[in-house]
Length: 203
Image 1 (tube, rainbow, N blue to C red):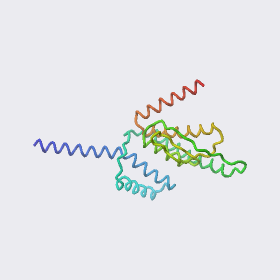
Image 2 (image 1 turned 90 degrees about the vertical axis):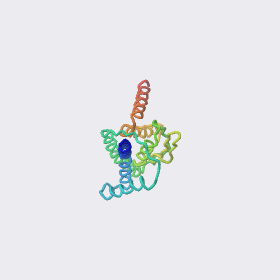
Image 3 (image 1 turned 45 degrees about the horizontal axis):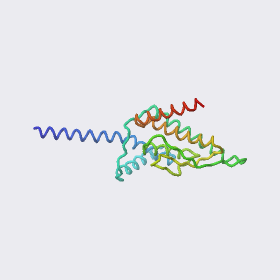
Image 4 (image 1 turned 180 degrees about the vertical axis):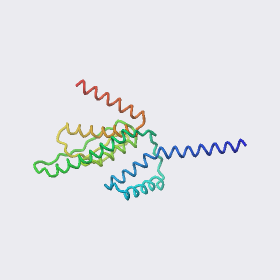
C-alpha cells in the first residue's frame, strides 16, 4: 500500500513539475510568436498560426537547454512596453523617412556601445531585438561576457546624441525588466536609476 501511495505521490509531483515548467516557458513561447509576427510585419491570423508552428518547432525540435525565466510577469508594464514599442516604431519610421528626404544634410551615423545593467541572457536578447526592430538602430555585435551591446544608429551628430541613444536602449532594458524580470533584477534597476538621478540632480 505504501509503495502504491509513494508511486502516486511521485506521479503527482512529476505532473506538477511539468505544469510549472510549461507555465514558466509560456512567456518565452508567446515572445517567439510575437517576434515572428514583428519580423514579418504582419498581424494576421495566418502570421499568428505560422508563428505558433515556428515556436513549437524551435522549442521542441531543437533540443536546446531550457530558458530559465523569472516566473514573474507584470501585465501592466507589459502593456506599457507594447504600446511604447509601437509608438517608437512609428516615430522611428517617420524620423528615418525625414532623414532620407532631407537633402540639405546627410544624417550622421555612429557605432555606440551600451553596457547593460542586468546580467541575464534573455533580458539582453529582448533588449537587442527591441533596439534592432526600431528603425534607425541596428545591433551589430553583442558582448555577452561584458554585457555590452554595440549598435549602429542614425541621426548622431554630437556626444549628446550618443548619450541620448544610449539612454534609450537602457530605457528599453528597464521596461523589459519591469515587465518580465525577476524581483532581484527589478530592484537592481531601481537602485541604479535612483543613483543616476541623484548624480544628475547634484550636477
